[in-house]
Length: 603
Image 1 (cartoon, rainbow, N blue to C red):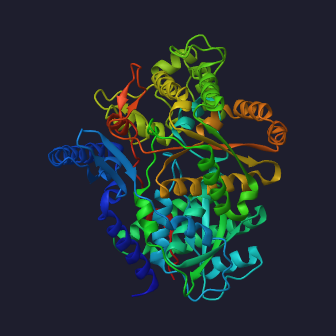
Image 2 (cartoon, one colour):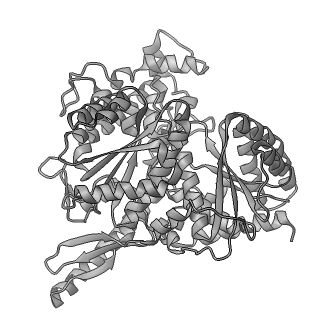
């Protein structure tokens, strides 16, 4: 079997094995309705098991433990303790190995004893795809270099791949996409906190951690602008060459690889996929493997709300932050962290700042009415038409903008991926061949006017959650990054820190969630809130660094204990619901097949 056939077979075998393994396998490539159906099935099964365990607990007068992982759509590590009185405690299995694993990334590796096997790289890509906290995270891509591409990379870097090593090129997206961006973007409201670099940092850290867990060491070489240009030029030659290799191959695996290569080539040509770093990878004899990392990834889950019964004291919080910064290694020089407890004023003010950014200053917290300014005022058909013209989308305006919006379909190029999925998921709309959304029952197109109403409705659902920012978790961290010439590197470091934070929290039994939306919506206001609080507390150095723009918010990270089924969310309000209902509302997203993002050398 030649190298091309070996690579295609390895991709197929890996994909089949992952699809057949656990709940994460069932989520690969699932549509949102399919994911919802799986969640309903698994949640019902867990609750039925909990009910039977409750009967046994009452009979013997002692708690019974069950596996509650199905309720989180994870593959383990979610433990429910059923008490005789009917109450359910929820806890996470801990994974002490993670800190050791993360620390090893910064050790000096003298040399490689062999190349990184393709199977190890495929598993690293899978782990990277499932690692992030954010729902709308864009995965990077891995291109395993050889031949002319490797030569071009070595020339661009001015160094050769170490003997016996494997060169892996990482690529990032040019721009972050999200439901928030899809809602606001068509109306000319840009949202970006450099997430495309944050995501790249998460992806790189996840890949390297997974490889280290498999006994594969790696050395990272972030790319400078001139190196990006040179390697992009080499990719524009290499990808068509690989495409030629598989064009004559029969079978579904070859067709998949042709489609992947053609798509990536198109993205590189258009500047949508950008080289970000090179990893020199290889086996190292005696380097310990940590198979539990795979279990940790498969147990990883986020939650919008932590248990109201949990807490974190100041000493434990400082230890946690200190350990996470230490595990970040040299990239820690780009990062600062501000930590707040639930009863500190800053988290509440951050939530208010996001609310006011959407509804306008002075808006009523209950109705959202009466605000001055705010993004909602810009979600209108006039702004939509302006954005369409700015992006070169042809419009046939008849009798003014309002009339055009009522009778014309919403331009397909302005319907982002995530809002498209949201509109299709309930079966009300479906996509026509040209990308236009049509009503599934009547066949009539989604008009620009109706899209505007849908966007306003989605924006208001965001707003109702902002004011709860203070009350969702006992600990809120604002991760700050350096600005200026190091902005991109610092944002990338913030992504690495987000990865370390997320996994360190989960490994120690805590639930954590990363959010960039607060910075997208209210970055300037958050800067002022933090600076004011630091001045009040006497931390004038940090306050001045914020006010001068030396550092700026990159993202937020909230942490707490797992929400138990009987815990009440929004207690005492009309929106009160229990932990089971919260789980139904806070749904783990499906994922693409990770092999669609990995490109093995084919000869």
